[in-house]
Length: 404
Image 1: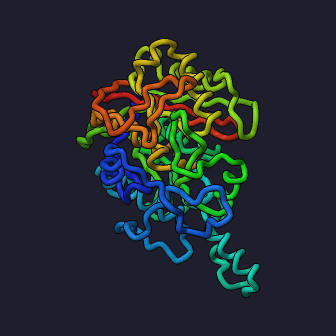
Image 2 (image 1 turned 90 degrees about the vertical axis):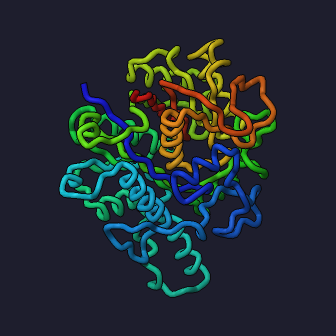
């Protein structure tokens, strides 16, 4: 039976332009949520976001030269892809043409398109800057990555709101385990834009202060941006070239709440189905799970429904299963969130350290979880979950495990 190993990771977040900087600062309990400078936030409920530091972000050497119309989201994706492939020790070669590319797609080039529209509204010329509209389609980062690295195998863009790149990783692992491809590059990229910022503000789903997942004082999420890319590789293919894996993708579950566009089903029964579907696909029991990287948006309803789901699955044992959320440090990166959190979960397994929940200080009786306050904690989970419970009821849960 084929196994899908994660052999390379690339990360770009508000905490750092690469995997190691992000991981180090995340474990230290730092947060990348700070005043947003990408566009004007006057008049909004919040003025904060986990924005990528443009001064620190530089594209690494690439097989292609991105043109001036390459969107912010695509540049994030290219940088994370280059880091993941280098980390896996997989040079771009003739074999790469058979690899799969499965990404979560979100705002793509919407920020750039907004800039074009803003100029037109101010009376600017009709044709100037038309190139800023090129990357509006949600699969644009996938297109850029495929062309840059010469990936002509199966290419899929998943757009299921905040579970997009979680589901993308699951599909990539499935392609590998089914023998369709030996390697899949997967994850997601998303960039801040005015539309999503205004939308979440109008829903009053954002905290005027920084997000505090699972905390009694939570008032909403903080938006973020970034990218994660994971190399998912067939185990024997990885062994033959001496690759060292981070973790194994054991399985995944995908369900739909069929409840509400923005509100979760409050009893947790809908998200319970997603967790149980993932465990069944992975062939592991709930008692095997030793860590959960939670969705943890820091909205009152989401955190409570998520904890209710875990209580339904794990019962009293939940008190001994650490559940942390990285959204207090990295913000809610929307369609990239699941890929980033899958990468963090794989790092936690490989490096025997569990990431903390930045912003958590006061426990909530409605969320009875060990949220790992403060800084990272030693831990050796052989089986871990990475959960994404998205708008529209689009839920996905990954089950990752140790390769040892």
